[in-house]
Length: 131
Image (cartoon, rainbow, N blue to C red; front, side, top):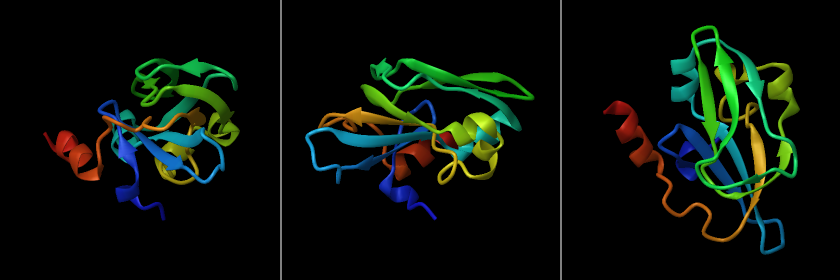
């Protein structure tokens, strides 16, 4: 089980896990959507993700998730270069409903130091979802 307190969150309902053990100045940020977002969308039936090599700025739309109820854009919580996408989620979008914090990560992005500045901790994120 993922430690939800170790993640950072955006107000647009994305989560970020930082892996600083890459051994270089660039760190790897794994990005997904929260269980709150997955629940709000309902049964997710389609996911579109960017190509590897795509440059993202914080706040950029990097894809979309379509459910039986609506379509939601996915926003980059950090700036960087997409280095990997999760093909399993593209093949089986329902993973976002069943495993949003483990199996259903969306993209991995190479980021610089300080990339998570300004994102919410778990308590801050819970506070905005309860408002």
